[in-house]
Image (tube, rainbow, N blue to C red; front, side, top):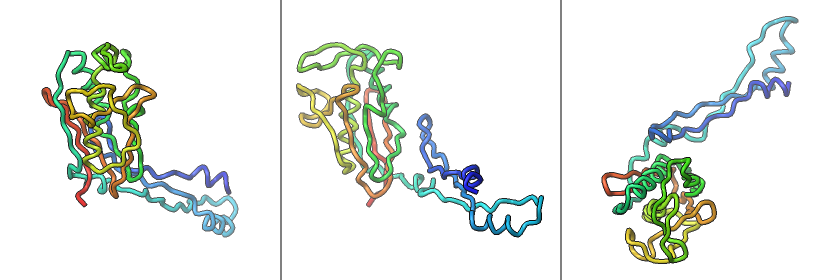
Length: 219
């Protein structure tokens, strides 16, 4: 009976956001074998009878309607993008990386985990960076501007900042003390959705304007 139950067990699937399009993918119910009813059915059935197994539905904890209700901008920040074509490319890639990320209440976000390595194989180009107060060039230069813009949007949304590191020198795209440097894999920006509702991170580059908005519900 245990093997039969395992064969027919299906976990529910929670609703989610399509990373590429931002569209909501609906939840799916699961199912579990009603062991007691199944045993009673088997005991009462004549030999060789074909039985329809009694299955009970398992509902997901969340619904797509819950995600569809996240229409309010609860945190927003934008910065001006300057510099080389390579730097613009890196900022655009990192913005795409953090966009359409769903965080349930209590769930944490890691910039390095979500964006991943800033490598040439993933489309990143060499651009200016700050290393211990000195200027240099490395793949992914400009990504810190995305992290800083996201950091300020998260603060404006009232999220709990778990890890944030300032640059060794002030940067020009945010006021002093409002920046967040990142370096894969050790120096990270991390925060937790401490709101009562799920949130969706949206980000993009419009002309020379980098923007990040946190979608949720007004309290």
